[in-house]
Image 1 (tube, rainbow, N blue to C red):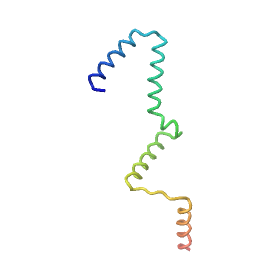
Image 2 (image 1 turned 135 degrees about the horizontal axis):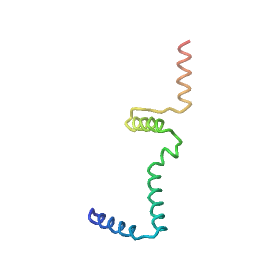
Image 3 (image 1 turned 90 degrees about the vertical axis):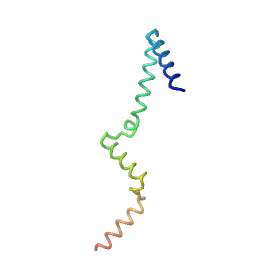
Image 4 (image 1 turned 60 degrees about the vertical axis):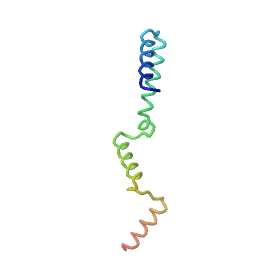
Length: 88
C-alpha cells in the first residue's frame, strides 16, 4: 500500500469511527488493545521481570554475535568435574 493510499484509508477509518455506534467503537477499541497487548506479550508470556527480560535480551544478542556459547548439562558437568579433579 502506498503512503497516499494509507493516508486515505486512515481518513476513511476516522470518518467511520466518528459516526459508529457504541458497540462498534468498543469492538474497534478491543482490536487495538489486543494488538497493543501482542506487542508487549514477550514479557507477559515468559513471566520474567523487566530486568530479567533485559538480561535475557543481552544474552541473546551476544549469542547471535557469536560472543556467547552454551553447553549441554553433560558438557558443563564434565568440565567442572575435570577442574575439581585437577585442583586436588
